[in-house]
Length: 241
Image 1 (cartoon, rainbow, N blue to C red):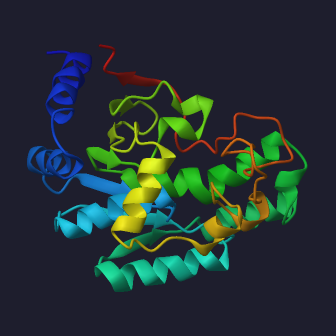
Image 2 (cartoon, one colour):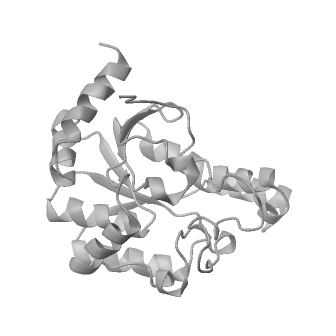
C-alpha cells in the first residue's frame, strides 16, 4: 500500500474518534515514537490538558528561542505544576546564535525577510529538526482558522521536510470552541491573550492586534509575508478524499 493510501486509511479511522481516543490509537500504533510540540499557545494548552488527563505516553517538548516573553516562561512553569508533565526544552546551538548575531545584529530580523527567516531557522527550525529526529508522529496545535496558509492542511498528513507524520487534532476547531473548552476545564493560558495578543511568538516579533485584524497580523507585523517561520511549511502528502 502506498504512503498516501496508508494516510488516507488511518485518517478515516481517526476521524471517527475523539481526540483522546485518536491519540491513544496513534500511541498504540507508534509506541514511543509520538511527540507533541507546544509553544504554550491556547491550542497547545488544550492538547496538553488532554494528554495529561488521559495519561498518554506522549513526549512533550517546546522550543526556547531565547527571545520569548516573560509571560510565556511563567505559563510554562504553571503548566508543569498543574499537569505534572515533563516538558523538554530544545535550544538553538550557541555557535549558530553567535554567528547569526555577529552577521545580522541582535535585531537584524527587522531589516529583511531573509534575515528574519535566518533567525527563525537558527532559533526554531533547526532545534525542531533535532526534537523530531527518530520520531514517527508529530502532534501539533494548528487550526485552519489561524491563517490562509493553514486552510488546506489535513488532520493527518505527511511532512516531507521533517519526514514525519503530522497529526493536527484541532484543525477544525473554531476560536469560540477552543476558548469555551479552556474556560470549562480551567486550563492555564498566557495572560498576554487578555491584552490583545492572539498568536504569540518571540517578544521582538509579536504585537497585540486591533479589533478586526487577522489573528496572525501581530506576527512579524513589519513585513508582508506569509506570516510563517518555517516550522509548518506546505509540501505534504495528505489525505485528498
